[in-house]
Image (cartoon, rainbow, N blue to C red; front, side, top):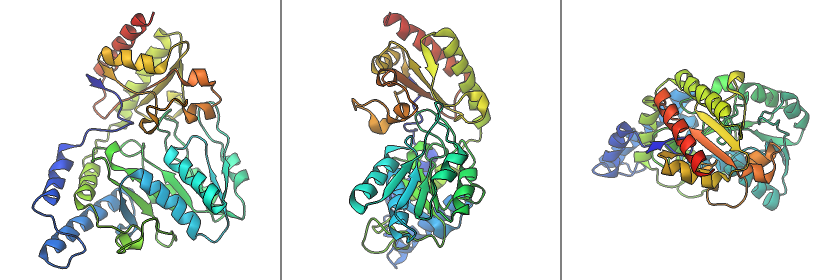
Length: 375
């Protein structure tokens, strides 16, 4: 079976699991304890924090370990919004991950915030001038993702963050799909907060982190013993923190090679299957994720096509794994202006760092077989 759903999750790297294993077994000390076992755990946690900080061009004290990007997104959005005295207005986009959108809806519903969702073009892109026009004196936060998890469109985060800075507005970015594929130096991006999910790049599920720039205030969501600088209480998961650090250290830098495979695959699908349409930015635009190829197939049911593709030996998805099983069409595709029936025909192929022309050809063969079976 060929696995082409890396945007949903990736296999755990053996190196990350091996590094984490001691902290699940004999090195079981609590990093808050002051005896020898606890100090060894604390040293491992410090190593992980420093490693993650180096990867992002941040300082170790700006790294906060979480249970994943959903928690990190909520901590950044709710935490900054509730701590910032500027006002109760937030700017975002309708194509953000549900972890962002639901956090915004919570702030609207419970705390009376006003949220402006920026218009998106048919390829999912956002105009800088629309962001500028949406910012106000009472805007307390802007949050926009680096790369869309469903359609692969990349946003110019450094440009957006610069605009927000002109207004004195903190900027948060969900960078889940960018790790290992796109540059993520926080100084170059100019962001004040950035979220990462470990299972998207070879660390275990349930691992993640938030970068929060020093000096940016945030209210904690979880209260307790004051771990993670008081921002995220609870005994730290040392094993998973170490796994994230090792996974980041062992990332393969081959985004351009994978992008070429993906672009060729996209071109072949669009040429060979007349009912197909690409969703998201064109590969030649420089605004598309190197590993995501997403389509709609007019007249077909996307879930049925996925089953036939799996029967033909290829595993992929219709979009966000977090929405799998829902009868609702993709909120991302709806935001692009696609009809609900069209949204339900979506299929996303997402390659890993081992992508090859042979994998692309295998996926095309499976697609041919699936299409024949569906008539």
